Image (cartoon, rainbow, N blue to C red; front, side, top):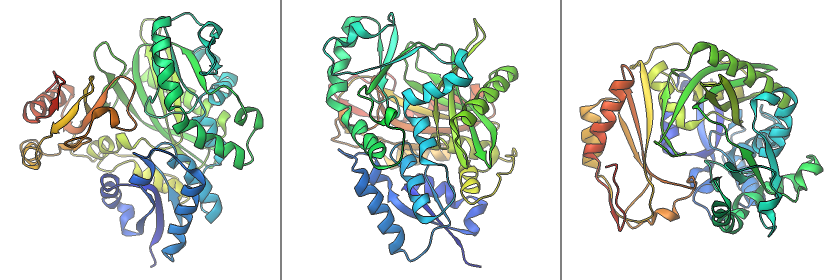
Length: 431
């Protein structure tokens, strides 16, 4: 039997290894429509060039695609539906994907069905010299580009000083995302009132409490949530410290979030697509707040699902793209709990040395199932890292499995004791 040809927008070796461990690998060839290096660490996104480059690469294989998928954020999530329509494979409509990713458009749509679950929000022009006084919110609040990923250029504003420090950074760097995003609205049949907005940023009132992410999919009009991942932040900071699965939130709260997710996804019109939805739960007021919707699986969670279920949720992405309703995920993994820890530093500096292969291998031998992925290399200045949040630099991802949360944390401490970074002129207090 001929294998199904699955083209991935943004294929990288870490996720390729996850794909090739799936049962689907027996019937699928995984090919690159674009490599990871085509969509990350670039100085500019030329959407027209990326579309044509991916199309040419697909045609050059001589294999007609059975599915085109993406697990990374912009531009991969936007390129996948464009390519799917071009090659006649199954996938979401581009308009629905953009309605998730355009933060202002998404809030307008959410407001129709879950008005009590979203913050106050306002759009603004960051190049307006009088813009601070035009925002009808009292600090503290967040400002962010209408299109971004991984909290890029998102800043918490506590006073006018914070605003004045953030705005120059936004003005200097917002074009990286806004220019290619605007290209899509100019090129494809999308609502002009959104695509031609002069405002490119928005302000939102704060959401607070415990954070989590719901992983789900929409298939032939049915919206299903199949997993909830907790998101723990660094103490007194907004940056994420780890993702942990399964969630420890009360079941009643998880059910409410699932219902909110279904209503929002249905209103947006996202179908034939995986998704993840980020939430806050304020325990004091028992309030659930929706932060954002992403029209993809979270690849940052794939190892968590593999450790707990014995199969990564790449399986869900593939099933939906191949026109199959995903099967329920059973608990056949090696571990009861899993964590994805993000080792961070909060000051810029020049990386002089990173953990050796021997150090990383020794950790894997001592704690089976533990995986260390370095995100930096010697002679890299941390401020040159792409895709970081506005307050920290991620040095490594550490994936750990265990019986319970206490074992995850204990293993993580053991990893920190053995992983040695040398960063010039910066003190790395966490290692």
